[in-house]
Structure formats: structure tokens, C-alpha cells
Length: 233
Picture 1 (cartoon, rainbow, N blue to C red):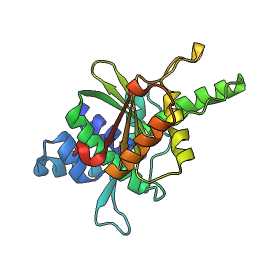
Picture 2 (cartoon, rainbow, N blue to C red):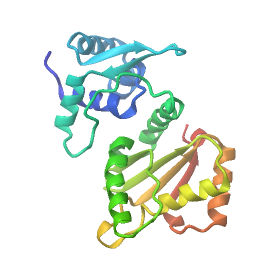
Picture 3 (cartoon, one colour):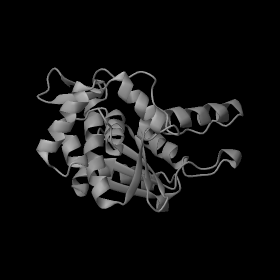
Picture 4 (tube, rainbow, N blue to C red):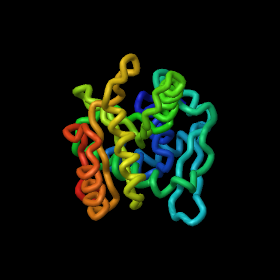
């Protein structure tokens, strides 16, 4: 099978989002056209690049990369960190959150001029290294690892965080503090992001989160954008 440039981006999309179905690929890469989408997916499957799996308790067939496809992604996007082994199943501990992240990405890309979506896996590994180095040097700043990084075409780097459930006031403030720490410079560590986009599952949760943020001034308010998922839709 001769792969096109678009195919590698499809493979990356599958790996980054973790809960991708044929309909998602159709809407993202084929303009909503079903026939060419399913023909391409069938070719991927026949060539051994993907497997489709009907997940228990779900009516949808999820798509997973095989090792050869993941290796292609790792080779094409060397600056982005990816796991060495291909994902073989849904992570049930995060599946609801992962599905809503994918849903949010759809609406974010309609509203903003996005150049690149950076996965949580990459952020967890790169920021995790920074956190360990800081602690080793006596810096114990709390840092929240965001759910994704969004690079706009003008170069703005946004930390995207999705919150679906109500947390205690202390835990919410801790998370907001950790996101603020991504926006400041720590001498040689530098800042990681230019802005934060904090999205909640409901408007009620949005209002509660904003009240906590305004009451406990963590700084950097002008660099935070809050929205409820329903407002994006």
C-alpha cells in the first residue's frame, strides 16, 4: 500500500485521541464523505496498519494502530514523544474523559486557527522531566499537566484542560494554581505556555470554577479563558 501524507496524520490522530471511530476520521479528514473514508480504512486494515475492535458496552468500533503504524508516526514526528508500544484497548479509567476531549477538540478547531494538537502523553513526559529537575533543585512548584497543548498558527501555545466533575475547593484551587505555574518563567526553566483554555462539562461547573478562581487569586487571570462545553457547541 502506498501511503499518502494525509495517512500519517490520520495515524497520528488515532494515536493522540485514543477513542477514534470511522466517523471521526470521516469528519476530520474526508469532509464527511463516507465512501472514500471506509475505502481508506479498509485498505489500512488490509495492509496491517490498524485494527478495528468493537468494545464491550459500546455500540461503536474503535480503531487502534498496529505497531508498524505507530512506528511510522514516531519516525515522522520525531519531536513529539510517543509510547514505544501500540495501544491495544480502551483505557476504561479515562474513556469518558477521552471521548469528551475528542468532542471538545472538534469544536475548538472550528473556532480557532489551530496549527497543531499536542497530546497529553507528550506533555506528561516532557513536563514531568521539568518537574523532576525543579524538585531536584529545591523548587517544589505544583504543576498541572494539561490534557493537551494547542499551538495556534500565530505561534500562541495554549494549555487545554477539561474538567467534567466537581472537585473540592482545595483540589480545584490546586489545579488552577498548577496551570498558572505553566504560564510563568522560572529562570532557566522558562514558561511552557502562553495561555490556558479551561473547559468544563457544564455551565454550572464553569460558574463554580470561576468563583473559586476569582476568590483565590492565583494570578495570571488575563491569560485564562474559561468556557463550558455547551458554549463551544
